[in-house]
Image (tube, rainbow, N blue to C red; front, top):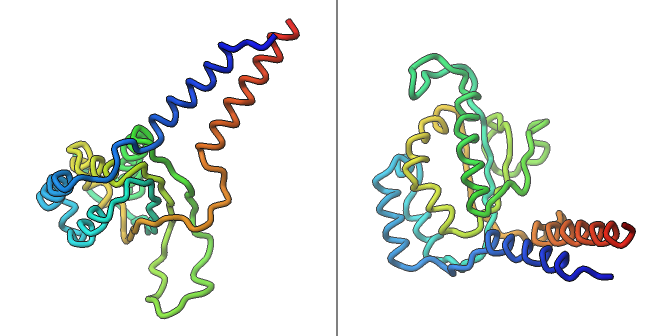
Length: 208
């Protein structure tokens, strides 16, 4: 006999997942944009980026998810630890920043869509500067532009900004929207996992 509570439970879990994973608040409001820009211009990030580019990105918000492409050259050697002053490998400083960034990203419905390390220099390059020695690429999913700005302007991240600066020799990032993506999206993979789990649980109940 089919157990309706089992399937209702699976559906409820999926609804909760979508409530967390999707942006239900719509695009940024003008007042939100002004508040975020004020924090950016008062913070350390304004030292390294053009606020006008960020403002244009926020003002064009459509409320949908986006993917940030990051190209990073991890710094080598040592630098003074921002808190202790002790000589510390720059890679360890970058890892310290990442350990704070990733849980916060996941908490707000974001996650890495792809991360990879470079295994060779440029094999095809047109009218660009020499390869500076890139280390890794990251393709990060953000639930919304609002979530990105909440993270970027949070005091917790302002306090660890120096770890990122000291651990990064060179980097650039820009937001993208996928044209073609063959990897299974979490909306589908989570649904399939829940369906399989419910199906196996239903079979187990029927044979006992």
